Length: 193
Image (tube, rainbow, N blue to C red; front, side, top):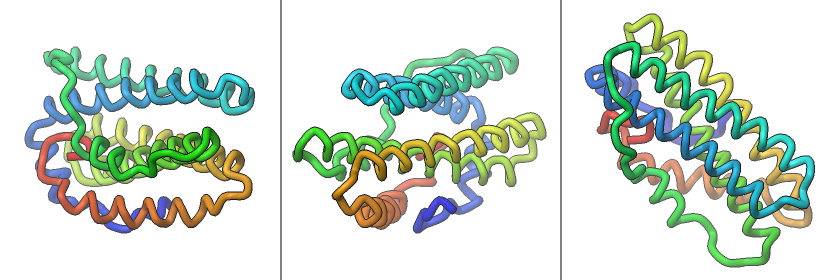
């Protein structure tokens, strides 16, 4: 469904489970960044009423996820901790098409967002199927479903607002590129690491 070219090795989930505090802290910040990203897209495209309407809901949901992860951290006696750099997202962002007109920039941003949501969805699936912690397994299963919805929302709007552009080719190119980028990840206790 997601079209991801390289699936996550289940050994990453074992690594993540070995330092669940670090994973949860990183995950919390990923949710905050996802909410910020949606708000940023709204800010840059306020005239696109349907996009604004859906991304307001998406941003609210991402903030709810941030709160849910924060609550799990507190329940387990952990603190949120400082935000850390997300090398995967930064590398994917550097590879993103630069320049072009406003429409192209919107489509690029939407595809970039869809890619991050798709990978997060895939990682949550791996966590839900691999880790032994029943509470977290259920939690990540529920979030996997939500992330799949976010991925399809961004892709839907990229196709809608990319009229006259070969959005599906751009998406396939991004999937290929992401498959190469992700080869360097899966070795750290972070959601994308």
